Image (cartoon, rainbow, N blue to C red):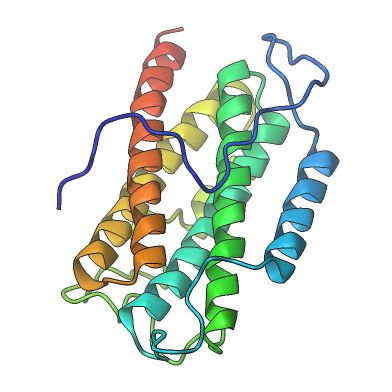
Length: 226
């Protein structure tokens, strides 16, 4: 299946940034504490909300591709949220601040949805199989415990210490690679599953993350030339 390049809003969470203090470049920043509170509230709401997901009759089983995808993508998304919160808190570029806030909120909301579906299926958020075991031909795609596109511990440590233009370039470069890995995983479940909720979410991920890659490419060119 080919990646769509048509910009399409992410259906899981496309919250607009609230009014707040302007950044040095004129953008609006959520504030680290406020953003963290929103993420926690989203997780709590996801835990108690009634999702349109399938119920116990005929749901995916313990070692199904659907369960493996939801577990692995939740872990994959968690790193994107971590990187995005760092960029959102420390970048001075208005577009980076906005994009990183959007990614953090969107992917955290999707984590809440995926974990809620696992609970509805009476499955644990973690399984007994290794990462990517649900995806045929994925042998060797996990390196040092990291799924496709994920940043290494050293890259994250560097990002935590970086500021200014270097932070923006590092974040956008790492997030671009992260999105490519996520798209690869989402496309795989589209080929493996006919579970409508899972495939619907996967299509949202493919379209939303490809749209963000297009934006990242434009932003990287601007920042690197500036």
